[in-house]
Length: 384
Image (cartoon, rainbow, N blue to C red; front, side):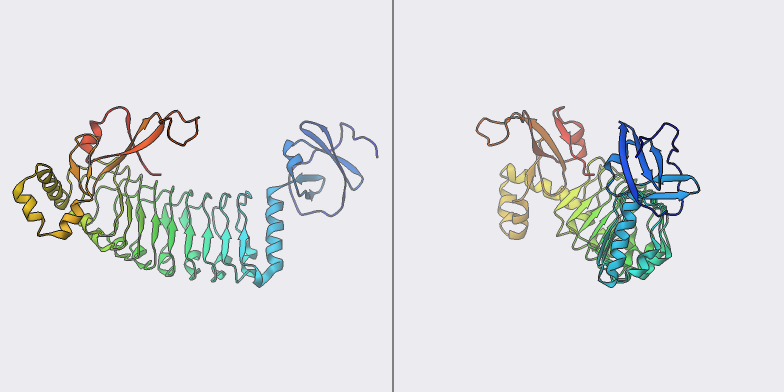
């Protein structure tokens, strides 16, 4: 076999798959390779060829191309199709796919479909045939809407659509997802939510961080099983009174919005464990919190009237016993605060890495006003 000359054709373009065997692939320089195929040498100017585990030639007249991620995706899909009804999981993560494969309809018992980190802008009609699907991940693609086809996935429990360009949710989609437990729509361009959000009766986790929402729809507050609601980095101006109906809510995150008032109804969320409202402009706290702070201050002053009266209310006494102190004003508070950190040099007696020069310690601030007056070594925390 003679060494290739400098006049051999360059691989480029694409077309139908050609047949034939690779006789040789030899390196000539750091970014040039020569492929011997069907009696001819072809020059490949691509440093990524060395990393390819699967090579396939596409032939269009005299034009050829060597691809990697597309071929890998096709091979993975082919393997799944060979499994037929026995295939339960298909992962095509990060394969630079631009179109969802229509062959999905041949996998009727598929349970998990992972297509995140691709370039998909629309879904194929065949998606609606996957009625046994319980997890669909289309995160980090190019979708501009939550498509109508998803409403036919009646077994779906987990839906990931983060990191797209979604600005609308097609009519009827949410109404068909009666078994949905988790919905992740972070990092999109939604300005509002449809009323049918209230039909997701089994939803326990909803995340809409980094969108353009201005209101929390009342229908969302009818989701009685919801335990986590993440609405950080939106443009929400107020919390609706209906928030009190989220009786199982444990985490409510509203970081970096435009909220000015924290309503009394928030205090009725008895299961709430995390309330993160950092980066808002809250000036008014609920009356219940204000009353609690007044009582706590009187107890600190050993006010005899309040100290005697509190003994008659053991439930209130128990709640007040869980109060905390503000790192700025040193006054007690009960349930609303801003979480901050400050950094200290670790003690030699601490069993930590010697490479750590400073470690963060949690501290709490009772109000936005105190937060503005904090020392420069105290930093606020915002959850992404």
